[in-house]
Image 1 (cartoon, rainbow, N blue to C red):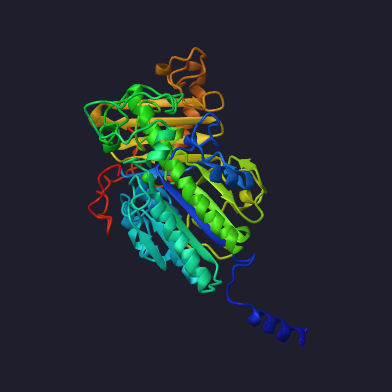
Image 2: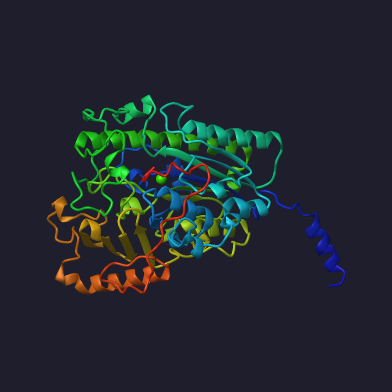
Length: 504
Ligand SMILES: [Ca+2]
């Protein structure tokens, strides 16, 4: 033993500090801006959206059916979502949240994805849109190219972000840099303005429409209306006048078939272009011999309505918007697998650390779902909570456990007090009575006496989650828990400051 120890120490010292080997895999984290999982054929086989590269990721990796963002205290849902991804903190424990300075540690940015991976010896690179994000964390990527690119050609659109990653990989190869890398590959699309490239717009029968006085024409190649489309949401969601519901160029307040189908066509044109940009990078990684040692994540900061339930934006908690697409491929992940997962975007930091073999920071509140990725278990939690509090308070909350989901809406100043109870096993589209389905189960069950016990159970579960997660608001029929009136959100810092128009 005395002889062996120096030998072992010498061997350990002889190891390179960090190389892109099986112990320290590369990470490619792809984040798109505003995309419902149900846009993708992977989640809705009837969707005409073509994404061959995402299909390949799904075929070679794992698809999550239960991936969620935890919510927002702002109309700009992007912003807290991106804070949660970067920091692994729950929504009410983020620096810009009400009481954020009290519920989040100082200098949290030093425990975010770039800071943690820089310290572990990773090469960190980022490209993404600018603004409505976590600027103090974004600044910590060693290489950073953030510009909002939502135009309809390569220089002004998604190809620009693709070019930045391609340039980075080529420079890395020419410099013979063998440090493992973490690339945060973000896009500015398909967030509006959804100016697609002409050849992709043509494929989906869409036009870059900007004339508010007249709807675009119907076209046979436009995607069909969503199954849960409505011409209007049946009640004020507590923030029905938010920018996304009334002022998105191309739709505005219109919900007619032509406007919605054209806008979905534009969304798909932008999403297919993103898929093309992902394909370029995957091909380059393959040529470099890095693909097999890289964990590739694909997701969005939140979902999107675009006509579903008569809504346009991201300021609601229906499944199309609360859920996000989530696909992961990499070493050890069973190919072609599909799980529920029950993960939040705020679990990403812990999971990346777990996969890379580095400790998650003490400030992290997320749960590593590496055991799910490795096929060891199907979920990481039983209960999921969602919040939207960007308009009147408390706003919207939801809770999901198993097949059952409760959504509550309250805005005393607007006369809103609504409750929805869905059995997602039989009503996954969350049809309401306004959808006119004849089957009794395909509607909101909150007022059905047969489900009164389930409603009470879900109400209790929601209160428990609100307490557990330090939700600073309560509904009028809940105990007030002696909560103080919450302060206004702290002003945001960095380059995104002043661009925080709700919904941007
Ligand atoms: Ca977004």
